[in-house]
Image 1 (tube, rainbow, N blue to C red):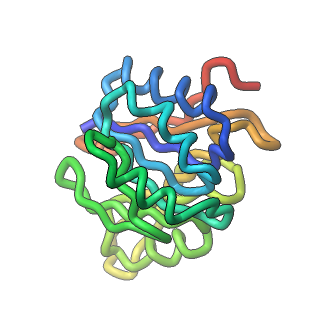
Image 2 (image 1 turned 90 degrees about the vertical axis):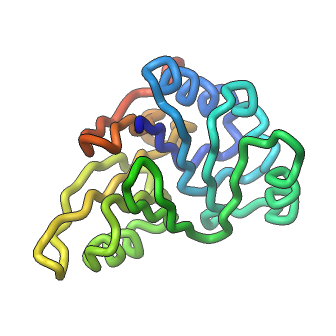
Length: 172
């Protein structure tokens, strides 16, 4: 299963949509958003792609009630999980949390195949050694909105656990 991982969209609908559109063209079957959507209506730009969007809120939460209501609309692609989420997709255990220091701590447990975070707007793909003598992938897609650094997202394959940091089309 191929996925698109974004974070820190900060209401930038055009860049968020551009990232998801490109990832879908490459075969993405789901979107993971690691927080800081801000206005839940920004996620409406993703409805047209028909991919499930798993989202948490981050520290710029915006209106959490509106986010919950958006996820409840008929035919909504949005799955709102609150402050964090433990998911199983493509046979992999994935954890979404906004903050990198929490993400690192969760990766070290060895309970997850992949841990995704955002917040610091610094894209990164790291192998973290776990207390169970294995490794966990720690993925930070940076900021899809290009707030500060360039606009980026992560595209990857859960079957092979191969991921890459991609520049958002039209981003700086």
